[in-house]
Image (spheres, rainbow, N blue to C red):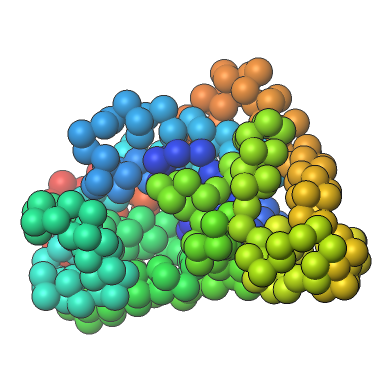
Length: 335
């Protein structure tokens, strides 16, 4: 079977955007591919270096969310990035193959740099080497496990192209050593937030988390954006600009046509529509939260899964590094 590398930065619990954009696909693919899921704590530190406790805490939260949606540790290798020193070694080697100007031309990096400038003003100019070199580190993640495919959102495509460039340059200099990966973009690569923002994000305050309880979900959905032109309960509305209808399409497929028709005709009020969505959302999340609760009640099992997965991942990365060192002529002491 071919290899897949995907993963998450442990900066918070995972939400519906992660589920429909990536997690759902992971569960489906784990029967078809050798799947490696990286909990990228080193990369999380690039913009959370002053809050290591946050990153450490969320390593477990991300692991729980992956297991909760149905990731099977007997099929999938779930591991922690910082515990694979071979990734750091590859990052150093790859940094010699990429110019600073090329990193700044990466559209995703450029957008993130501009965002920092908007948030922090002149302090946004103080971009760290680690932040700028994120795509190089990501290339090391991917190639360490000979990943053939990398499931990503469309905003991450420039990073995958950067990896492909690094692989081609490395193989040109040192001979055929690394696997050149391809991107796999899912049909729901980006899920909108409750506020209508094109992206659901932890920092945007517009997300429904997989672990949210009913009170939290009720509060969030009751505040979701609807058609502003619907003033009275019986006014007809446009479901295509309503975030409540948007989420009905995701978690209430069996009744979505009725929701649409009643919304357009004016026979459905927004409050009733939101309450139905709350019920559908809780029903949708029920099996996910049940699995999460099981693993929360068995923390020793989560530790075991992470430890065994990391050990297996490192063994694979060590195989890659033996090829890399040999072809770079730095395998001075052969075992």
